Image (cartoon, rainbow, N blue to C red; front, side, top):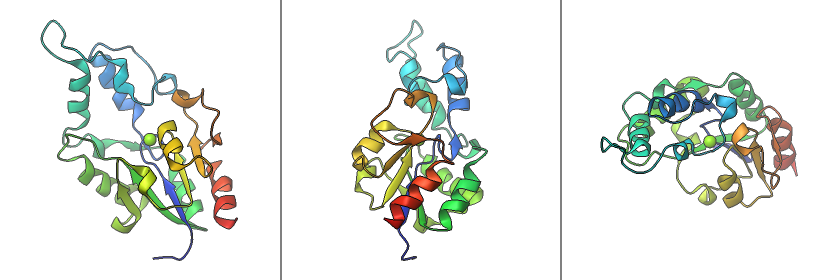
Length: 189
Ligand SMILES: [Mg+2]
């Protein structure tokens, strides 16, 4: 393991385009038609009611079940600029992907490990699957979820700018490319 400082990066909406296929399901289940840059919630399942409809189907539960199906996670597309950013970060830091498992899915975590290896070259020593990112030891985190930046401790968290976090002012915020300079400053301090 490198003695260089550890730079943590989230996966969904930082490395992967989670929103586009997720919003497609939302629409199919009767939710609003939104494009990726119009998403207003980090947790897009909140766009759907959490109670049974006239047919006894709970749309929010149906959404969670669909994204947890075999093959859904592995079919996500990498975001266009992400591979270049990861390469740049690796030139000065030990880059680790910190990503949450999907509760109730038997296949999500396995697919994510394979996906991170295939698209970004992360081996198993450079991936942490957890719902509690605050427990991960690292010098800086890039994440699109304000709750993750908050738990991380604030000072060294960087919010990757997406429409759903446009209201946030508590953290340094910018594109994933802009995170390169921020991370460099953090690991060299
Ligand atoms: Mg994310």
